[in-house]
Figure 1 (cartoon, rainbow, N blue to C red):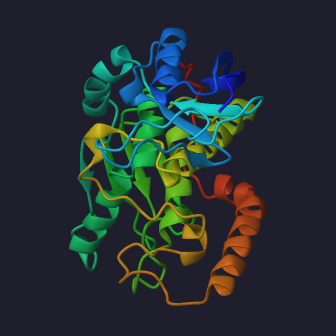
Figure 2: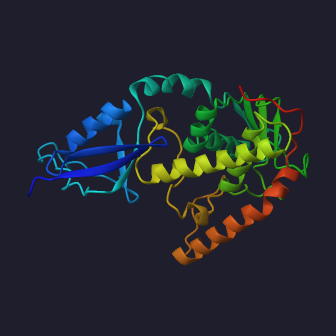
Length: 294
């Protein structure tokens, strides 16, 4: 192989870094250079090219691949994900601080144990915990709204996060609402931890939370995003077709429809979300003075 330098552009947290290395340099040299530039140790670096994770050696006995053997060539752009040792050291503390401190179903309604399971699933959703830690959201109590007691509401945030109430049951009480719909309402209510009214500031934050949830799951789906303390939590499917599977809270699992049918439902669901965002605001019981984020 001829000895030539190649130039790679690596983006990390919105900043682009240019790295020049010989094409026959070992992949570890690339990681070491990135550590100098970003303070992220090689063991925590996740490199993505064309949506796929750059693979290292399959076994410790295998020879280390060169940059070229790893699929990198001159002029390409690589995305890096990862955390510095300082940020990972504070992760455990944030996990214990920014989360749902208590969950509680309504014992007077049918199947309270299933409702508890639904709320637990939401409270341990890795993408939700990710945005809570990022924005320093803490919720004292996550509980449910009874449809017959609050027929016009899908969610309610009391006391800027002291209590969040979600309508997880169907109006007929014979089942539970789709997981992704309820989670979207939860994002909406989390935005009320900062803003009371449905003004432009609230709408911007609400959109940001939904975007960050999607980005987190896209990264996790590519095997590039990990929170070490979330190993034992429930994690809904991260495949793009999770939207189409319509995982129902309290249900028996995914429906056995064809791929085309699931994709069709995914498109319908996405269209419905855009159309019903205003309806979601009208179904939110939270209203009050704005709270500036600090």
